[in-house]
Image (spheres, helix red, strand yellow):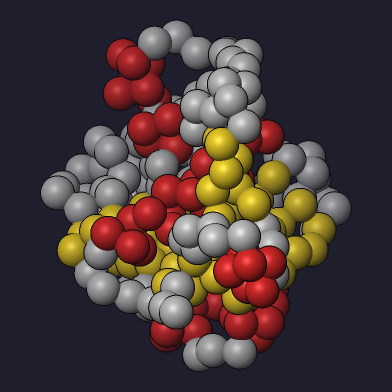
Length: 221
């Protein structure tokens, strides 16, 4: 994964009600969640985009390589527009782990899809526990950004890579009490998590039951 500047192409189409609403509604895996907050953006990276290319191509043009995409899994449960299935979510994650040819316990952090919807959060966290094991560190950036819809996959992948390279992972904002119905995971709270890991996972579970899981590896030349 490399980063390339193309000029300022930021385009915003917001369905939001200001930061006060994010503070009150954008808390994931909380005992008193009250719904998703949509904040569509074409690209929060002003004038930039990700380039996915071969190692040889990146080296030949002198690009700064941010990480390696080593694992990918996708499927669709196709059973409901907005009610996800934990079974197919965990299959997508296991597919990504298999594709990366690593053990699940090598994943040091998961950027969860986490939309602050009761059924979605519970299903996702149990799927993550089933796929990766108890105590896996997880947080969701939607607690800061809201749901950027079509842009959330690239934004959250970018942030996950940067956190891995900085050895620090952001907490889920406003999360003070984890819903006991959620899976047994290490929910990052407070001041975040300082941790060095070579592998992170970024998950998106979209409308219509489309599930995608990506695994990034720290780049070493």
